[in-house]
Length: 324
Image (cartoon, rainbow, N blue to C red):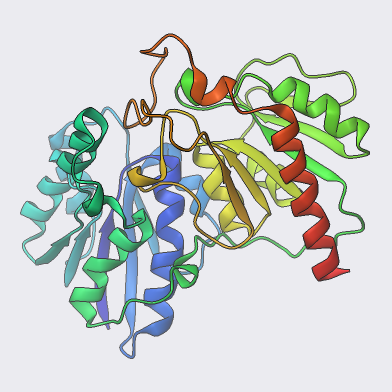
């Protein structure tokens, strides 16, 4: 049996995107492998019931290289290290592990050149799950599967859907420009359409009286449970977007300053990205920012509530026909 270590420290969405890749690798290798993961402690909870990882090792975000060395010294001697972060800490792990290693290409320079000067677009056509898979493809001589086979996967008990009325809204993001300003209005209109609307996530928003307010400091496991009970999930470009895809929940994601070329949009079945296509100032930042550089915020303000409402009801209708 080969023992391999996968290193990815952050962030929540990146950790979730790994899950489909590791599942596919584990299920499609003729040889037996044991997969361990090294990550930041505050992200480990999302994988607590994930069956394709043997051990999860963690460090705290502020830990030094000395602390990291102490953690690695308690771990097995691995046959292969897969560095799926490619930063100083993950490079250090490769250095001290003294075994064969593979590093994924995150096209960091190409992404920055695309954002700043609209260069290198042809190099940015691969989704992040494809980039994560390529080191395993090279190490184990695997063929590239359809991207749906690499869809993120989180185990959750099957929930019997008695209706198709539960709309869960996650209106928050790591940067304010990735937050669509009309989520409160959307919830009110969806309630008028007969949907049971719930707001989740950590942040502040004027939740309409017709909706259920579950915003605030909730645990990661509680967040996952809320998403798992949704019939449709409406969200920003954020970690919970990837959780919904991993739980196979119909998902609508509203993208503003970030674009598909940056590699983190949901390309999977039953997902829909709503965006202002053709706006020349998009993308304006790799991760979004705290303000609009152009001072017009068109990427979000020009996405109307009725447009999102239409796609919500259309997706619910299509799924009800499939399962009804």
